[in-house]
Image 1: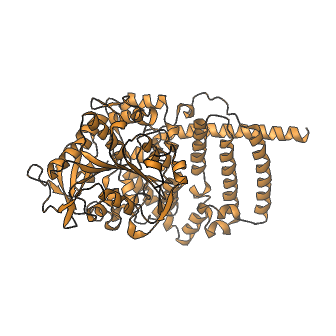
Image 2: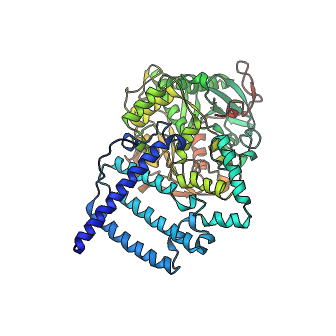
Length: 585
């Protein structure tokens, strides 16, 4: 056999091995979906990935495949020679999973980690070489990422040099503690990301002083005690995402967006969503718009006597707020003077990695399963989002908690992240089809909510739009897309970091930076965020100060701060943060 024929045979073998391995990985992911949370959320592995189904053979770009095959053989040969000589450790040093001294001190461990990293890199490059449409290629890439993250040698005690060294140094105590940690997490139903025993809602998180002044079966309305002698005449209402608890906006006094708004002189109200139980299993998207978002606006007006108020929606809360404003506009009402949308979708064209889980079959399945009633369990949805970053949010804690017997350090944000919430099935099924799948909110008249045709062109109010540059939940392009559908005067700001860290960035920390673009002709926004960014200016520090200045321009004059919470019609029910936020999923 000549050299070219040998190369061709090697290339075919490499392709067949990858295709078979990928098929096995996809089947394993589909079968393991229930435990990982991937198959219980609507963000499911698509039909093409389900185990037991016939798969068309994967096709690869021949030129790329040959290049990869040649490079892999060269790199594998070099790694073998280095391994035999206990040579360079460049590969393991570049990955924090294997950067510890124990990995470098043990030639076998170092070689196994280096071989794994070489294989992982090659498999990811082969995923990119798959000849298919962009969505299919993204699905293949995701499956390979999950597979490689799960099979890292660091995840197994028999291969993890650091865990072995710790077991020796502790005389086995780390293994005993790891088993204790595993049993504890099995009992609580999720992997511990932080020491949850340190935190208590209302005691050392969600501590801004206030009171519950209204409640129904969907939410409690919190009013916060003023921190200034005068407040702006237009009250301020925050609508957080209903897939999480509101206190991400009120973790600690020094990083609380709620406290910041109060300290800036705004009479502040917050929606605290009820954690749905079986009694809410039939609630719909319409219910959340009519009886939560719109009701909260009405109650704030009733308490304050204000003709208009300013409102903020965060993540799904922004989608809910935008929908509610469209419904109100269709009714000829305009109770909101300005809106702030933080990392929110109205246009679901660019949903990033989540797009790979959405297709007609998966949406229909969720509609059949829970469209008429049922609950989407909070932990299932939380698990899905964790597996979008498996090394950081899953396997990192598996290794630390169970193999090394460590207790993760206290971290308020990760405590909040583990405090999951359920969702009513009909609400979720409508949301999947009309937003992620069909993108109906931006199609005038296509979506009908509360008996009204949604038309964002009627939401003609000033809007402040914020997106985070590294957001993997609401990509920056998705956050920016709202500028193309809202007709009022707009300001778009991009912050550094991700979905949560970018938003929760108080000025006192003097961290990160944000970008603005004041050079737009007559306030017109270009079609894409990339075009907007070309004329943007970077500013050090927090975007909160920019937003505060903007909000004050829409808040009206200052008046004496109220001495009491609520009014005669809406009296104090209990102290903030209320009991709804304390209910566990």
